[in-house]
Image 1 (cartoon, rainbow, N blue to C red):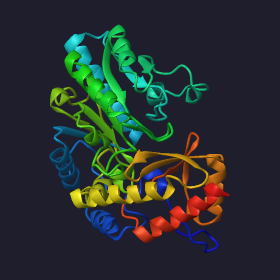
Image 2: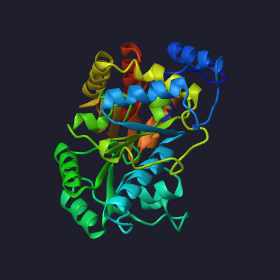
Image 3: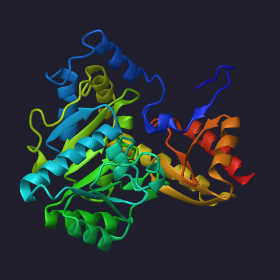
Amino acid sequence: MYDETGKEYIDMGSGIGVTAFGIADDEWKAAVTAQLDSLQHMSNLYYTEPCALLAEELCARTGFKKVFFGNSGAEANEGAIKVARKYAAEKKGADHFTIVTLWNSFHGRTLTTLAATGQEHYHELFQPLTPGFVHAHAGDLDEVKKLALENKAAAVMIECIQGEGGVLTMEPGFVKGVAEFCAAEDILLIVDEVQTGNGRTGALYSYMNYGVMPDVVSTAKGLGGGLPLGAVLIGEKAENVLGPGDHGSTFGGNPVCCAGALSVLRRLDDAFLAEVRRKGELVRAALRDAPGVESISGMGLMIGIKTVKSASEVVAECNQNGVLCLTAKDKVRLLPALNIPEDVLMKAVGIIKAACAE
């Protein structure tokens, strides 16, 4: 990546986890360009081949039964919430509409997904938000259960790693406990995989690291490889909840975006995902006891670095020295391309280490 002066940068943010195979990836470009020569748009009133193939691939790789395509993570989360509310209304009554989410979560910037987001500073100037959301503390299974039962919850919605919240990883016991509780109470479990999904953590989706099976998954970012695409994956329990007219998106499942996504998804095989995990461990090993580094969090190539200096100061120094990083709360956040060459990755890590230590 180069700026207008010709200065070279190593991109350790990949457009906030979007360009999964880097900038102008040849295979992704070829897939997108070929589709542009065929059909650029059809609306979701009809099937198109790229859309159908992508849905089949997602279901085959995950065990989900149906997929709805939108244009973003927020839109995917809106769709997931609609699935949960209609499911609960039909099974238990219209008063079962509350969604339990976690404090420090982030689910989007629409009014409904802001309400789902457990960070009050995002809410301040946008009241009134959509009602029907309550927040529990991450790791507190008893609080999740209490809020869900007291509020007649339709769903519990979590991120296995809170990305915008500071790259905070959920404990396995908590995630499994939430999944077991939801199954016992016939409350849908929604896992937000917008940032954690599509190979980012070294598994195809982060819930796979925990041995649980959600009822609904939302995803976006890296799925499209650089074009806007979101998806709601719906499991067997709720696969027939939404019918014609219940939900829609004019641009959802755009064939060009889906063609690009297919080129991404088909490369995320077991061997590739093992490399994501290996590269992530290299980064952690290099930074774990480095001067100025307090702690490391995350999984795979979703990495949070708690530094002695402020995260914004470290990121600014990295930028000056040719490495583009992100922040997440008080941490430096790394979301490099999943196929980043090892030598380029470790060169960037060296610059980050120096910025942390100064």
